[in-house]
Amino acid sequence: MTDLPFDDTTDFEDADRGFLGALVPAVVRAADGRVVWDNDAYGFLAADCPDTARPSLWRQARLCARQGLYEVAERVYQVRGLDLSNMTLVEGERGVIVIDPLISAETAAAALALYREHRGDRPVTGLVYTHSHGDHFGGARGVLPPGSEEGVPVIAPAGFLEHAVSENVYAGNAMTRRAMFMYGDRLPKAPDGQIGAGLGMTTSTGTITLVPPTVDVTRTGQEETVDGVRIVFQLTPGTEAPAEMNFLFPDLRALCLAENATHTMHNILTLRGAVVRDARIWARYLDEAIEYFHGRYDVAFASHHWPTWGHDNVVAFLSEQRDLYAYLHDQTLRRLNDGLTGTEIAEELRLPPALERRWHARGYYGSLNHNVKAVYQRYLGWFDGNVAHLWEHPPVAQAQRYVEVAGGGDAALAKARGYADSGDLRFAATLLNHVVFADPSNRAAREALAGVYRQLGHGAENGPWRNFYLAAAGELLDGPGTVLLDAANPAMTAALTTAMLLDSIAIRIDGPRAWDEALTIDLVLTDERLRYRVTLRHGALTHRSFPAGDAPRSPAGLTLTLTRPQLLGLLAGQALDTVRHEGDPGLLPRLFALVTTPERAFPVVTP
Image (cartoon, rainbow, N blue to C red; front, side, top):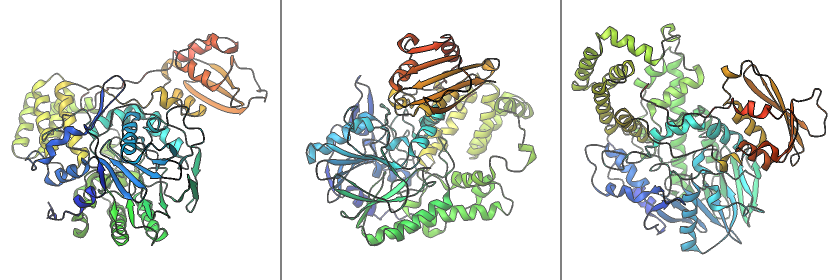
């Protein structure tokens, strides 16, 4: 490991600066009494680092576990430690502007209550989403309950809703399942268990909600005034999120960096899965921020971690973050063009020593290893060019053949234990994984693999790697856990456009069962003044829209005339006779019968 400056306490001083008060106890419950957040569970971090954790990650966890309301600048406050992300509050003339309302409505409401306890009962007069990830909008209804949003601008970068839905709804079930491993929300909070996620502690498990944006930021330089507060925006699409933005409060001399610059190396591709990010453009937008906002701020804060004070300190921080992403991008491309694969590049590439020693460039959340592979994937995809990898057997079939070659399950298990005993945990994991996939009932192999995963987890500097390894050990021994977060709940569904709702149905059609089905349904939405023609052919559900008054070229088998709330009711199971309809009423249940429900707790590290 690089010799790290553990005697440098600047981060701890900055993380504690401006503290006003904590939530005591730091436990948030849902309406049914279920605990959705417990920051007090991390009290063990006050002790010295044990041998079950990397000292560097332990240090990061101690910083991220700090909890409470903090003053960032005059009229600018942050609540930290009540979810994976921060909620920032900016005081206006009449009330308070909320930036990034956490993951869950419950934690957002608790954060707002903590602010009001110290700063007064100010109404929410504006809501800003920095970007399209769920930990920055999911708690919206905790600060803007239904019926309270009238007249309150909700500001987001252009494309926000489309990308929020594509990630959290279209692929939401798989991402949510993998996020359980990445953030370790179900792992025990303990020195040998979950000690954080590098970006924050873990994810809350309350109710995910969404209030749709009313104001789109479409260009850098766009200025909006909310409750008397001026905000100047820098659009940064394709960086940490497909839709993201930095922004300046010029009269308060405070700069929000969203999630584009935090106190860790970030992900080019998260382990939970996402669209691969562009490290090249990320570096370029950080450079643009240095120049565009130069001289106009005294503090920079982000949607995670603690602020950086002092203009020159911020410039140095942004410059190093810029160079971090530029270096890993450019050097991956250099070696890629030499013919190396992503795995080969990841094994050899290291950062310049000056960056390796910077705490904010360490791989607590993203890692250099998997970020290099992500850059490779962005340019060349999953195939490394070796035709042996073009048409491999799927995991179970491949595992059975590996075990056969090794001489059977007992022989493979013995060899794997030998690799583990010699310290080659990586290959021990590979071989034991084949033994488990070849015979999931082999309890000895499952226990041996779980032991290897625990050792790999305890040695990881990266928070998500540690959580993945430890969660995998748990699944091997105890089976898949319960998934608590639900990105497809009614509160999220209500925020989708009608087109997005229809898309979310299309991706759940059981294609083979629908091969020979053919039907057409028109939805005439009177409050939208649009007609949506929904067609099922060859197992594919497609739709298009046109003005409600336009006569279609051919009649539909069923036409429903209804409002959007009535449509949501039908999708929730209300009877068809609650809406006006013409044609064959049997088409709707025929369609719904083909809509599948995904398995939320599918196995990840077992067949």
